[in-house]
Every structure is written in structure tokens, then in C-alpha cells.
Image (cartoon, rainbow, N blue to C red; front, top):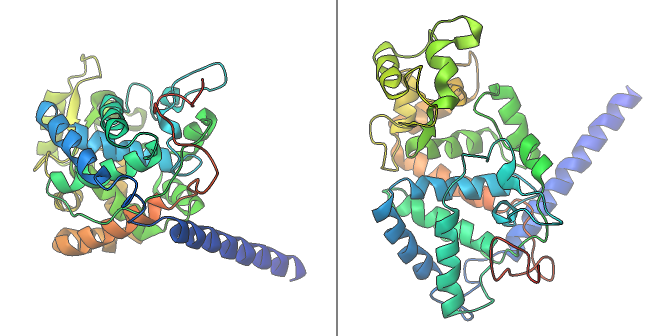
Length: 332
């Protein structure tokens, strides 16, 4: 009984500490942070992304994913943008990111445009947050006031990227634990997974589902049969693995709620997608059903979850720096 009380007290104190951390970060970040120092920051970011979408519609989903992969490692601090150097092992080379994350050139273009307009003001971490919002809203999704004021990290955490970023091959319980570890709950997990309503995934990620599920030599039996045929045509077994399949087979370039209807029809592309609906007794099932039938509810939850994620351990005040080049620490 005594040890149980200690464990409960420890959990209670940890919960209080995490709540205070999130509250403090929200108090430090605000939507008007650049109103006097760089009032056109948001419109500059949006303009560059509009051009980027014209050349490659995938850029929107790629930029949103960069923000996600940044925030899950040491918080939203722009660390994912750092290249290798004498003192830095880049997160770009971590398993979840290598040959997978993209859009870095668009971030560089945004940074150049901002430096030309208001040099030394807007952080790379805030660029990722602004780019995520612009990418979603420009492709049919909701818009929101992005909380700003993050500063950039002086280092990266490749090992943390390998261990903290949820994998498409993990169980729902493991992914839920990774979300909980950064202060995000089950509703956040389902809402943020809804970002897979646009974008692509490489065939190598889903190949085992199509041809050798769990070592059986057969496809995943839960996959919708017509969807399986389509995916096998897109991702032939003899292919390179670097072809891409639409995460949403219905409206692949539009941010809507069709992702959740796809899950109900056993058309979740990634194993981690389908598990939200197909894991027996999972609390995520009812949320998927709600979002599938009510796009407004999904959009509202997505916005709140993006704000929650953007508040994971930001560097503020005198911590970190404002990088002049997102790829490297100042002075390096």
C-alpha cells in the first residue's frame, strides 16, 4: 500500500509538472509575437508555399510532417532542420526521417524571404509552425492563429528522433504511449493522424502489407480487396520501393475528413492508420466514427491538437537562438 501511494504521488507530481510546462509554454507563445517586428511573416510564408504547391502538390503534406517530426524530438525547436556538422548528428539521418522527410528546400526559401524582409527576427521553429498552418489551409483544411515566439535549438538529437517519433509499424498502444510522453492524448492522436488525408507514402513502407504480411507470404487479410489490387499496381513487388502511394485514395491532395471514412472501409494505407479503427476495443474507434461523419468536428479537433503539439517544450526568451540559416547553428 505504501509503495503504491508513492507511485501514485510520483505520477501525480509528474502530471502537475507536465501540465505546468504546457501552461507556461502557452503563456510564452502568442499569436501576435511578430506583429511589430515582422508583421508580414505569415503572408510571406503563405506566399512561398503557394508557389511551392504549384511546382509540387506534395510539399504541403511534407511541410506539415516536418513540424510533427520536429516537435516530437526535444520539442518544437527546429532541430530537424540542422545538417550534420562537427558537433551535430543530424536528425535527418534518423530512421524515421532518412530518405523520407522532404520540403527542406521550401523551408530554406521561406527563410530567405523572411531574412530579406525582417532579418534575424523569425525563428526556423516558428517557420515550421507557420508552414504547417499554411499548408493545411491552402489545401482545403482549417485555418488557425499560430502561436509564435519559439527560438531555435543549438543542437540536434538523432537518437531521440529514432526513439520518439511514432513508427507506422508500431502497435496502437506504443504510439499512444509516445503521444502521452509529450503531453498529447488519444483525441490528439486520432486528430493528428488525420493529416494523412493528403500526401504520399513510399511503397517500401507498405510492401509487407501487400505481399508478405507478418511473414505469411500473403497480403494483409484486413485490406479492402479492391484497394489491395490498386496498391499492388502502384507498388509492384519487383519495384524499387521508392514509388509513392496516396495516403488518401479518394481525395489525395485535399485536406478533408475522407481519411476516416477510408479507415471504416479498410483502406488505411499505413498499418498504424488502420489500427485506429481495427484494434478491438480501442478508444480511438469512436473518435474515428465521429470525425468520419462530422468534418467540422475533425477540423476543430485538428486545430486544437496542432496548437497542443506546437506547445511541446518550445525554447523561448533567451534560450536558443534565431538561426540565420535553418540548416546550421549561427557562427558554425
